[in-house]
Image (cartoon, rainbow, N blue to C red; front, side, top):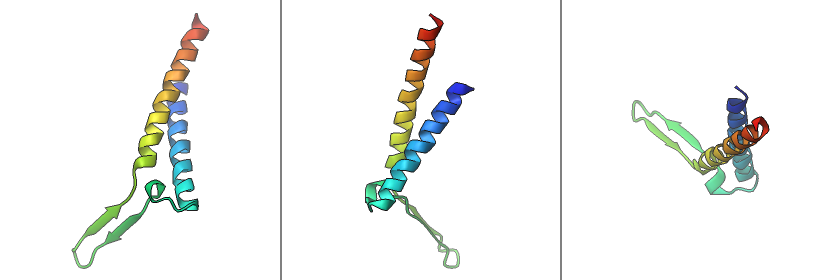
Length: 76
């Protein structure tokens, strides 16, 4: 359970921080834009950068590996 919480917390914090930095400094690669237009069933959806989410997934993967390594070292 602790392992899951570490991965989830790392993912949320990293992704949130990168989106925040993107919006503060107006970096398009780190910003999330969402539009939804339905002009009488014309239905138009767009979203933007998923790079912070990808980076968050990578960072959480490494955080999980580090946690597992430290846990196994502690066990002996």
